[in-house]
Length: 115
Length: 113
Image (tube, rainbow over all chains, first blue to last red; front, side):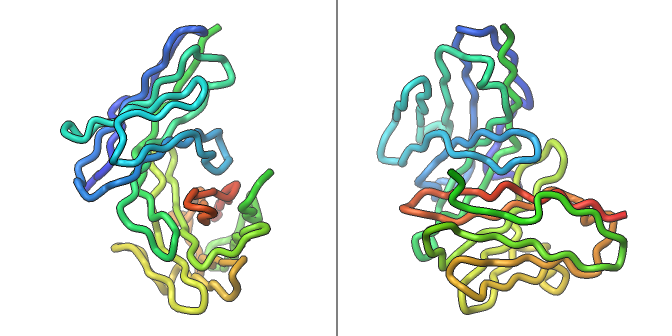
């Protein structure tokens, strides 16, 4: 059972435009959501997160929106740059073990920024 | 710089042999680390939770006798793939949390031939 879903395996966006990556979840116990960026043969790197008590969090070119009623979150990147090309994973957390987050990941979306 | 270091980054082994992967938290102590596995074009799947000084907690469907986890110190967790088979070939990643933020190792590409 896939508790965190990214239904778009790939997305292609022109440089300078907005990239919107979507993520849906099914477990209402999730209270913390994160986005990670991943290059091939490397571990994920943290981008931005949002707590369930908020509906928006912004950090530079990255903004994450959370719609709890719809169990949906999205990552907006604007303006998109060629260096943003990577696989983006949405992750959710419902359990903290001794301060550590136990994450459930979506399948990832491969973002390609075209010059 | 990296806060979680994973070694080796790539390993090729013969069927039937065992492979050990190390995950170190740099400059901070991690009583809990997580081990993930990623198949090509798929999500990162949590395999187990590594607990310092106690037994690891395995996710459903993960064979604890096949994937041995040892968390002997506050900065080191190891994953040993025992009697490896070609189907164990995958990308293995560990993570540790510092100040409520999860950091990931660089990952280990295991190929069993």
